[in-house]
Length: 294
Ligand SMILES: [Zn+2]
Image (cartoon, rainbow, N blue to C red; front, side, top):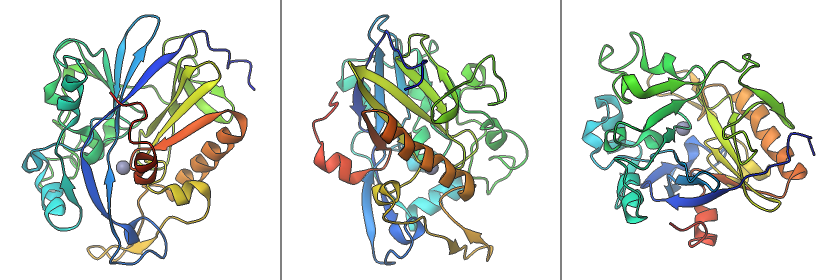
């Protein structure tokens, strides 16, 4: 175990509802049938730093009013990936006794895909939004909606004055290495929560490593993969031809980097007594409906 892993603090982890998405599995898992549509959660998390009671939310899931996503996303949600949001992350927070207007220090967004950014407007002015290195390129510039009417990333998705992009992984005053990862940041300075730079899925993709009790760890892997069988190594990421462009496509912006990162997550499981949870892991949720319940 690395010498850096001597945590003095712990965090309390609670699962928040973030809605469900119906994934055509052939777009995610190699060899899956085109008829295999799987309803999976878009899990969100409330993290309370035990020593200071500081509250962090990791991901906001799917928004209820899908017509307020950019038109290209809204169209896709009516045709390719259907959504089902009975309770969004804001309502889930309120149900847990947390006031999103005043009680949340930071919302860390694992990445800027629509099923992770929810509806940030539900938070008050004291909440800041944290995005990973390079994520701003998706919501700034001419490719973002509404400058690009067909854009998938909304330049107004997050409040401009309260959104902070983490420094590039080469910034060694911020990031350190922690086996097996090359860039992690000790958020509270006591080893209770590490933000992990998790490249490959989308620019700025982040994961969290949480110390939840004596020798107990949870790794929130976000979209490092969409299927637990890929994490375990018994299935592979699908590659398919995009009907619009004719180009090869997969669930990750950079498959090679995503594969390397997933290998590191597997390595982490060898090094630590850690529970790895993917954002869309339906089988984990079915097996653990009351675990980390808020
Ligand atoms: Zn994603």
